[in-house]
Length: 347
Image 1 (cartoon, helix red, strand yellow):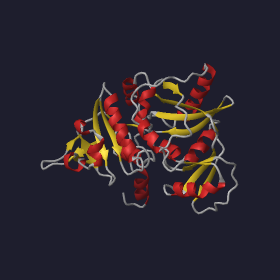
Image 2 (tube, helix red, strand yellow):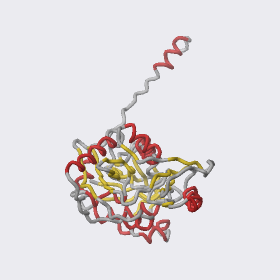
Image 3 (cartoon, helix red, strand yellow):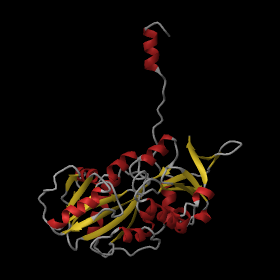
């Protein structure tokens, strides 16, 4: 199977996306990969596999060696003196983290041009990109979430909080702009940092030593669920640690928890996934407090597609690619307009 990896784009997580794409190049062996890079100006480039190195992008060598692409009906095309040549692939994989990839822009573009793709659809992107919408969505499904407040940049900062708290930009991942605030004296600075990236922030209690578990998966004809991971515990993973985390390509150890708790986590994941996230491989991060499962966040396009959680990631790609949701074809017959014209005697 030929898979086109789409990565980069205009996002604070642009570099993370490059790291994820390079990682998949080393992980995916059973499929032929092609790489479509979107630069910060939202120009498309076909990148040769041999050039998939971080410096190739940071040095902007792609401007000289990459083949510039245009998107059109059912694909990407290389322009030339004698017409355009289509880039052949069976399915695209949206590997853009943050804005453009996870906010629904690329999903809309691919659907509009009738290009098959693995990734969250528009509705799923809208829900998971905004941390408030994620909370409301989970609560509507009966999945518990940690208490929270939302603060706008124009709001008063004189808010009642029980410290410590964690401050997060509402629409950003990879721990960018995130701070742990342990006293009121540190609140203004943390809010200034977060508001650099978004005009709304999420404020949650920071719970020391909380148990955290990650589960990834997809629904094809059957559930394709990963192992449950208990990530290495630190106060929180900052941007640099997350950057390295996105380059993971070795399978991790399964969490040492009982089957009852595993089933609770799996059932919470299934409730969140189906049907909104059909067509995507997502990772959900959960907290466990007093044996109760709470959703922390949904990663609709996880770093390096969470390949390290699956026994056979190559087979997973095949299963997802051959069980993608499709849009209903709407037949336009102009019956309404024609009937009006007939009524006016203008048929």
